[in-house]
Image: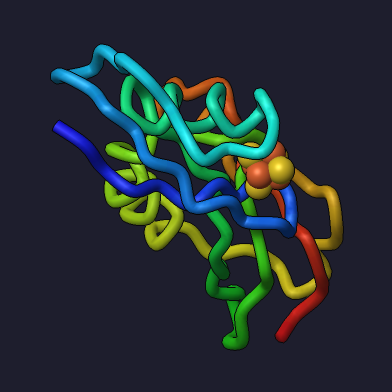
Length: 116
Ligand code: SF4
């Protein structure tokens, strides 16, 4: 099976062709450097994403937050449910931790900016 994957490691954005079976990558082509092959292999075997979103404040408004490291892509929806349960103070500021080790991923949800 082949799939096109755009590398997001650098702004060049190579459009790579990945040949794979299940989670086993047979070949990666059209990557301009080895980092693209590593990214493509991770995308097939265990894709991860940094989750960037907002959290509601206790008195209205929202504050921007993100995970401090990438989390498994398949857990993003469940993590959003956890984030949507909490309310934080408007005085929260970067890099306050609002959820530690979300869903056992090892990633903390941290504030990235002031109230929006
Ligand atoms: S393959 Fe290399 S050059 Fe191409 S986008 Fe990825 S990191 Fe950049």
